[in-house]
Length: 397
Ligand SMILES: *Cc1c(COP(=O)(O)O)cnc(C)c1O
Image 1: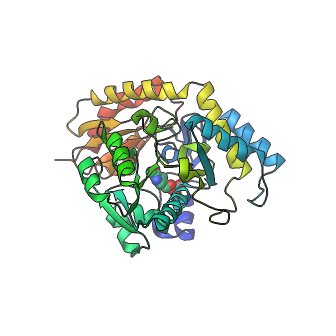
Image 2: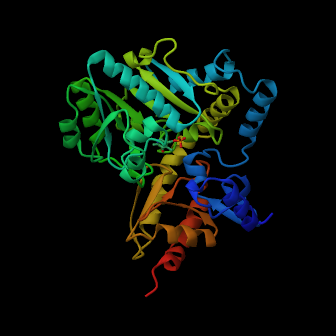
Image 3: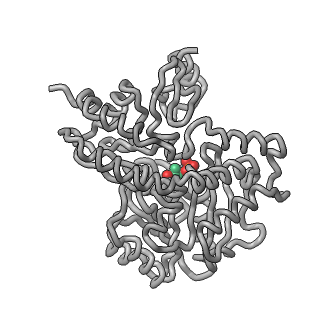
């Protein structure tokens, strides 16, 4: 079936919340995907920073198939070995005294973190939460209440949690907002949906200090930034700080749905038996996939690759002189192209016509978050095409 007819069926069968996406994908290999009309594209968005090992990865495919053929689901009534191995592996990468809860998505990892923060708050007379303007933490009601974009939050309020928003990257504004009744601060190390916005140098050191001094929990949402995306296992390791609670998802499963919430120190045991749960959380197929992702990132040196190629690519992209391109920012293989005006949709479209899938994450920002296995040659092919793409996307006089 052609893309057009599949899109018509999509439109008739699905709720209109996504609109109709412009591309129908049918297969992929490495960093290249093919659409329903047989066109190939270099995938520079990787299913929103998810497809960390690329498409059709042999080892990942085998790990998933083997686990699915052995036992595909146990529920939380039973223990399975892959979930234990995954939790142990995460703890060894994180170091220190910590415990894991496994969920199925990012928003659920944040629901877990918020419930922990609410319980902590009740134990200590702390009643409100602080998060960042333009931050994104998910679409379920708890995570949405922490999401700093009014346009997606406010239509669904009021919310149960009292959340106060501060500008991202402003340590003094955070200090003023975090008083003795603040239970927890929720932040992304780099704002992903906000347009790949890294925090200023030194911000997270100050954030850690402010939370510790006030006795509030620091919850880092690393759902997008971790598992190699920023060029380290976890972006907070680049800041040399430790959160009290950490949430993960996206790249962790390499494409299979999985999320994790990690509590450190005394936050590891906030939940007592019966406080939280998930039927699918700890699913052995997703856990086997995540284990394979972690092992492959380590064995293939993908952290160093993301760091060095990401830096080099960002510098090369920044050197593309074009009136539409104001600047380039990001961390590792996670780049925001900042445009002179609301042209991101036009750039996304022009990039597709040139054979590249990119994402208009904000009206004036294009996001690149390719598989971590992208080669320097593939990255350069986009850099070389960018002036032409920007020309096509430029407003006509
Ligand atoms: C994607 C994302 C989420 C939500 O994850 P879902 O799996 O879509 O629920 C939460 N926080 C951050 C930082 C994200 O990038």
